[in-house]
Each structure stands twice: as structure tokens, then as C-alpha cells.
Amino acid sequence: MMDKELLAGRVEEVLRQAGFSTSDRCYLRPRSFDLAARRGDMLLLLKILSNIDGLNEQTALEVRRLAKHLFASPLLVGEKTRDQFLERGAVYFRYGIPTLSLPTLADCIIEEELPLVYAAHGGLYVRIDGLKMRQLRLERGISLGALASELGVSRRTISKYETESMDTSVDVALRIEEIFEEELIQPVNPFAKGSVDDARSQVTDNILRLLLEIGFEVVPASQAPFNAITRDEDLVVLTGVSKFSQSMLKKARLMSSLSAVARTKAAVIVDGESKLECIEETALIKKSELETIDEPCEFEDLVMEKQNK
Image 1 (tube, rainbow, N blue to C red):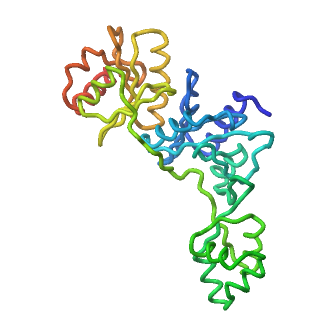
Image 2: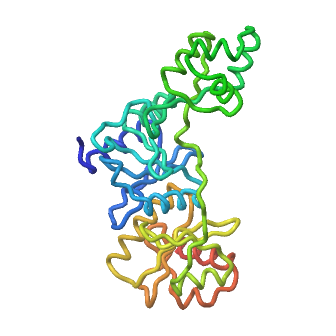
Image 3: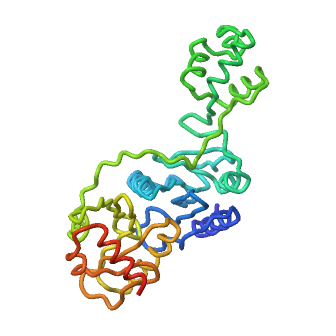
């Protein structure tokens, strides 16, 4: 099994081959995700773990929440779960995050071949196109009972395939395709933007609360290279809060790389004095400057002004 660093390097290589631009790897701890990658309108927030069981529920929730507010798709890339290697061509899920092996990722983004199979409790499953199956069955005059008997399942199960798009085992799905001589298995899109129960996290930091008072929505992050996503209708800002220090400079550089890929702004609110106006594309805004701002547009103007100095 590859160690995480080697696996991350391979993931970056596959992404670049597929035409994605990638951010710097998140080297600061704690880190809910490791990498941002973009191709056109597709933005991915990637977590990379050799053993996918290492992703806990709290971290997964943060990745999903950040992805939602950055209009991105969360994705976990790994090699194993428990004592089994991930199957090529199958999508797994870990706390709601689609999970792929490296070869499956390459198939999806280089070969443009989406997986047909997903893993759930008890094995591997596929989704049948129920409407198409019903249409073919009626056209060919096959009764529910006859098809059920042929497949060794109940009439109720056939009805559920047709009306509720109930998932089935790979063996049954292949047998159905054989009977109708048509493709009925629907691919699984691991890049679909998932929903997340976005109960508002309490904003406890006094500096972030200033942004709330200005009129921004503030989404706190506890395990990211930034402290929050600050946004309104027209603006999304990766936002850090820190005193001026060497570690703050590192964070600002990483935020700059992430914001370039995510197509957002980046700003660190400096608690105290700052010797600089900007680090790469990350604006450094003193808390005293923030306290003079009343409207989101003024904050945006200040970020732009700092970036252009």
C-alpha cells in the first residue's frame, strides 16, 4: 500500500494529465482536505487517505460544508477500506463523500468513463433505468410475473425497479440487460454536488463577528487553512484570522494558491499591526481597518486595493 504522500503525488499527476489545475497541497494541520483542483466549471475538494476509514464524520462534514459554499464537489481518494482494496470502477461513500481508488479516478477524468457500480452495506450495487426497463417490458409483452420468475425475484421487486429505481446487485442487473438486450445500468456520478445539512455554526471569533455585522454570511472552518468562508451574493472570500507571524505568512501563501483555483478572493484579518499589505494574492487587513467598514462592497474594495498595491 502506498503511503499518503506518494498517493497524493500520484493523484496530482492524474489530475494534471486530465487538464486540471491544482492548488498547493495543504501542508498545515489540521486539514480537512488536501487539495483543490479545477477544470473548467468543475471544482474538486480532495481528501487523500491510503485507508479511507481514517476519515471521521466531523472532518467529512466540514469538507462537505466547505464544498457547498465554494460550489465544489467533495471527493475522497484512497486505496483500502478495512482489509480490502477498493474495487476499480466502483464508487464508495464515507460519511456522504464519494470515494474512489486512483485507477477509478483516472478512468473518470482521463477516459471520461463514469463508474457503473457503487459499494454499500452488503456488497456492490447498480442502479437500473426503471422507466426504460418498464417501457421495454411493456413493448415486448412481458408480464411482471414472467420477468420476476425469470430473475428469481418477486413481482414487487420488479415493480420497485421500475417505479422507484430501486438498486440491485450486479448479477441481477446484467441478467436484466441480457433479457432485454439493452443497456439499462445507469452510471454513478461521483462529482455530483451533494446536499449537506447546513445548520449554521456559531460564529464565536470576535473578528469574524465583525464580518457578520458588516452583512456577510460567515461559514466557520475548524480544520482548513483558513478560518472561514465569508460570502455575500457577489463575493466569496477565504478568510483567515491571525496575528502577524511566520506561520501567518505560510497560511496566507496557501490561501492564495487555493483562492486562485477556487476563483475566490483571499484575506487574512491581522489582529494587531501588519508590515505588509498583501502576500501573493492574499490581502492582509488590519482589524482596525475592518472596524471602519460598514458595507460588504467596502470590504471588497479594500481587498482589491491591497491586492493592487
